[in-house]
Image 1 (tube, rainbow, N blue to C red):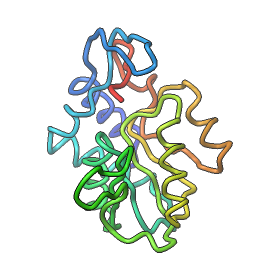
Image 2: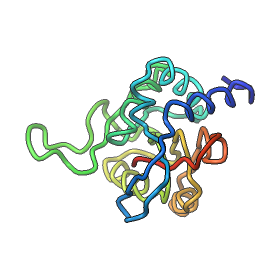
Image 3: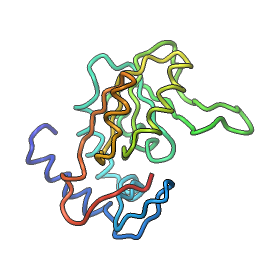
Image 4: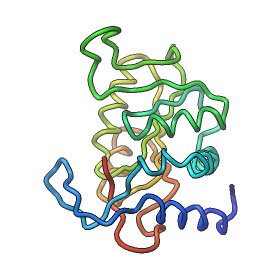
Amino acid sequence: MTTSTSLAGLAARLAEASCVKGPFDLTDGEQLDSYFDEYRLAADPALLRDTAAAMADLVPDDAQLLAGIELGGVPLVVALSAVTGLPAVFLRRSPKGYGSRRQIEGAAINGRRTVLVDDVVRSGSQLFTMTNTLRVAGAAVTDALCVLERPLGGRMLLAEHRVTLHSLLTEADLSGPRAGDAS
């Protein structure tokens, strides 16, 4: 999916399926009138497939591994892995308290060039934290992908830490009411 017409069509489908009128409370105390519900995206197989296909164009050519952040990034990274053929890892916000006790599950990292995948980026703090987690584990992280970028400083924070953000859409690309996020 490389034409602007097909991306505009995907944006309209995402807005219709996933932009929900609020109110919605964010962890930082902010309240949104509407938000982007990534679970509605993940629950629609055709929309998830088409979103992953569009995001595949954003994956750097030298990427070796995809890393999805719980919870919204996991279905995206699974679909993107299927489209690109790249292996995936799954990141918890904190290590599991039982069983494997791991924070990172899936393919071996082994110094591979890893691309972070998440649904929505606002401040970038979650991607920044997961970048550090992956780097400590030995991954080379220089890029991150998201479906929706809200212009609230995330791109700048990541750039300060040598991570380039590639967003499929920005808030302005979605028609209708202000689209926030459920992250």
